[in-house]
Image (cartoon, rainbow over all chains, first blue to last red):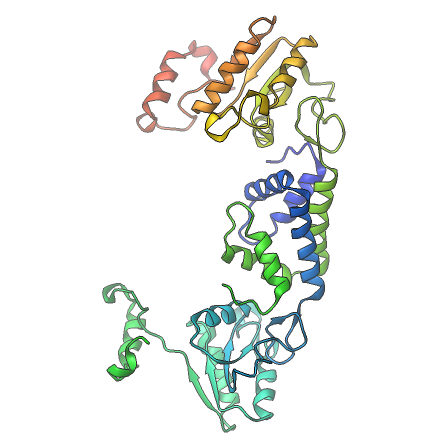
Length: 206
Length: 206
């Protein structure tokens, strides 16, 4: 798809195809769709993008995205400020919020320790996490990172950084997913789910 | 994904998820990607969209997209202006241009006759096509619509509209696709490819 009779459309296709998971054919489909939309719709999208890029900031406490200096999770008086859940990025916050199972605050690292990608402990918000704990009032840190080597490395690094503080550090449970059949679970997961078994009365869904 | 800590991001996700083939999860991924991009990149996209919507027009001869009143295909003196290829939409023009096998002009109908979708002959640019032929200088019309009932209906309608003019009307060949194995071709296609067989010397790829 290289024969554009309009440079303006070609330009939009070029920009759209820089987005993750959007190839040139998809970009063209999106561009032509927008070309047929009402002008007001296209303006909503374009101006929304500009406004988002201009105005969205990161909460200065938990580093979650926010429209104000301190996000609405950190300022919510009904949340347990003594409990911090450490996550890799913003999407993890949304995923955990959707479970309705967590009522504490978050700390968004903005990445994960990954020497292969050149990401070290100082490239993510670990110092800021330690700072929050130094300020006091925190009883527990829940590590909720991905179950990968990088996630485990980051968990271990944070655990060591926090070992001199009076704060308990836990990690989310790894195990066979709810709804999964046992025979299809991988061996490592199944093994950990046996090692980390719970008293039955604690294991049932609430 | 409904717990947005930023209304500005939520707004962009809402707009992006109106695009065809973009669900809320994809929209969120795109929004967060753009949030991490350079500001200049986001401006290129947003301003490109606005400029496209503002300035792109449809060629007043062939109804292809264009940045000027008459598109660069219609004004190209090296193209055969006596030959018009009739297509459904703009993407078909690009697809045919990419084959490098056609050197005439186009006529973009902007749709196809489809009573089920409430699209009749007057909703697409058939009158304009007849007008071009009335103006003279056209020797042949190639109908290049999809091989569907709607495409066949539109072909037949156009054919009847043109029967009193001194212009030959052809339709693109239907047959087994180049590279396809015969046993997997559907019966109708295979049947038509036998009925519409060519002298061997005309059938080989050039």
